[in-house]
Image (tube, rainbow, N blue to C red; front, side, top):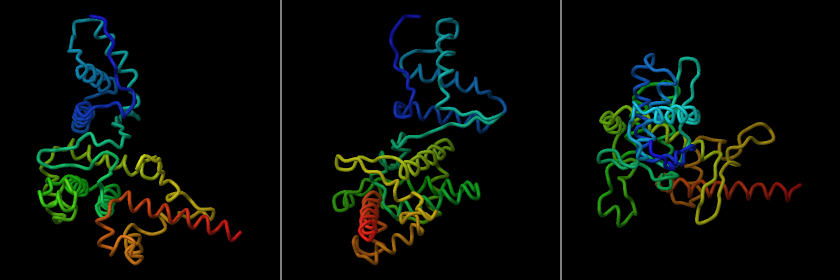
Length: 279
């Protein structure tokens, strides 16, 4: 095999959209025919796919190629997690590697275009799924986050590129989710779960500055959640609506999530400063 340098991803942020789509399809095969595949089957299949996407075609009779695939497969523990007979695909990234499915557009990287109300509804669906495992909850999540392109008027007046999050009913969201492939629906779930984790622990770059919302979700000295988690997301929306900082509670729902989070973080630090002054 001709010698050349090939850059193989070893972190999530090095995956391409094409890589992620194929990984989701491989995972779907595991879900549908779980007992048929071993961890080695999955990792070698993944290794071949990653090489193909980087210009190395399948060469099953070439010993150098077989050795390369085997060596690469041994490094893919960051992508696949095996526990007993269970093999699961891991995803921890805030880039949306499924930006468009058919005619539907999904959230932008880092959730920069998510509104507070859209996020509230999505959290409800994901919690419902994790509590009940009902597939309708995942379908509703997929249909909520992936919507038709905004009209020319909405693009101009509201700076939207997707239809507003509440433009249709849950039934219509579920129907839209049903039109997606199962691997696509799970990919949407994986991205949103990763985004939620990043929101509570990670760093966002906003207007050139690093912003971390972790203090809003930290435990207080008394063992209770700090103000970011003291009430439900709906209560937060009503409280901000009463303050009028973004307008009514409905206006809050249509405000960008990261703007709402920055307001909550500012209030949190103001409260901490007041507490220090009283001591």
